[in-house]
Length: 590
Ligand code: ADP
Ligand code: MG
Ligand code: ZN
Image (cartoon, rainbow, N blue to C red):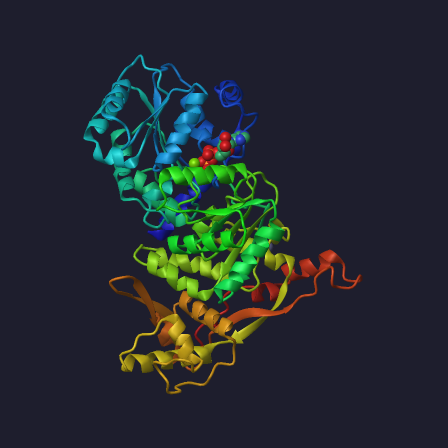
């Protein structure tokens, strides 16, 4: 059914691209503008906001895809204030995050818009009051926020909602973070599955789904689940031209890594505000302590801190008292600080999606900001043990590994392909490490390395030994205490490169992770992957593109070398662009 799916999505997309929705000719246009200016105190729409508002007011089902901070909320908040005929009609907003819900309701109330919320914190009195409002034809409620959990679990609420609908009071259903419906998404939530009943129960109530997740797979899944196949889709570009993307090799020695961080905070980002993301609470605590000992104005933020302390730290960061927060991903939702100048990832994110969201908290003011990721292959295995139980957890993780180990491609281009977008190198404008300082590339045949690694794994297996990636490298380099005998030739590459080879073989299915539980942790061992049989064929080669010499940059090149010639050569020549593929694996030879 994949083709049919694609057609559906294509049709939706074409409709979405149809500019008829971006028109000023709808009967409510002047009303919309008045509300935009007078109530929301905004002067103009951002891309796709008008289209989304026009189409939902035309009772179309739609999915709106916009990067975080793009302004999705307005697309259901504003239409909720356009009462056509009956001003007791309200919009039901389904939203998974309590804190975001609270923020929005407070903000709406401060704009004198009548909004209520219904969630686990709602008292019994408030619950009855709200449920009364839902069926009161004199009521002026405009937006009612509810968590998916409440919808799924409160029969009483559902019965009021049905009553409300039959009274003609339910004007629209907005589903925020709609990607949570999909198991393919990075944030699947079981309670969202309940939302599949909505379309059947309220067939003529338009649905507007909102998300910053753009992959085709997820969107198709969401459409299916909400029974809105073929609905309109509006998608804004995910390119954030003001963000500079960079990946740095993370030193294997913790102290050296700290020195680099300290240096960044004290020099490059002096007097600027930022976030340092870590992948675990332990790392978060360690880093916070170490950086404070080095005199950096930082504090930590993670889920195990008391809510009061967290909000205190958040405030001190907002005010600039702290230069940076060292945080786990618990720090994120609801951050609305415009002048974040840097987001540093002390280790990998869980996925490209997560990385994009986390790094995207920088530069909301559209001024330049830096997104630096410290990559080291060993971090893969810390994270994989956390995500492997999720359906696409490992695939998602490997996508960000690919971003890191890719030696030449524009970082933006890699992110874009993940969002099913294609950006030209002009979209980057030298705002990533690879575009700024291009390297020559070299294709290396790593087939022999793979054979060696297989030999070691087979030897270990026959001796009933399991090997983690680090142990595998140690054996390979002849430094293991477990397997002393020399099984294979010593590799001619550095330890760093060996790590990258293993990462590369892993994300290309020549190696595979094998998880084992101990009472305290989950350990990732390595075994042969699904493509290992390819190597039985003698002609099969595994090629890996690696960094070569640095290309002469404009400043370093002589005057004859016109600045733009070099770039355009690089971009247009079919030969180089082929070389620029991350993965150049020769197909199986006949
Ligand atoms: P999203 O849900 O897409 O992440 P939000 O709806 O929370 O984004 O909006 C992010 C910020 O953008 C908010 O501070 C909001 O007030 C602001 N915003 C939304 N629309 C506009 C607009 N048309 N002009 C200026 N600011 C806007
Ligand atoms: Mg939002
Ligand atoms: Zn680039």
